[in-house]
Image 1 (cartoon, rainbow, N blue to C red):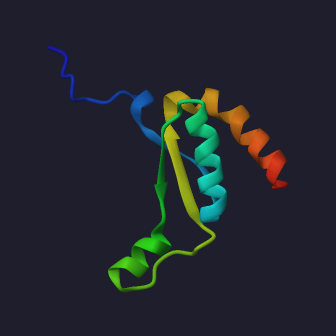
Image 2: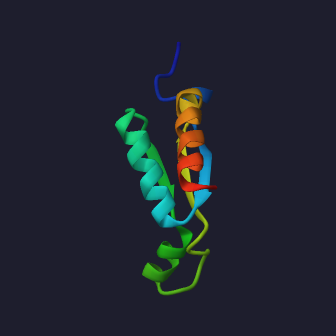
Length: 85
């Protein structure tokens, strides 16, 4: 019997981009416009909120689902070109 709670490889999050919070927020807007959900991991902000230092403000991580990588890659390339990175 197949268990519906088991995630396949396509439903896993993958790290897609690392940059400043401003860069991440801009890229998220571009992804949102194309119906690609994303997840932000900001260890620096989490550390400040918790009362200790952790991470770097320029090392915010953006994750997407593995299944969206092919659709998201051209968006990332255009973003990098527009931002000069």
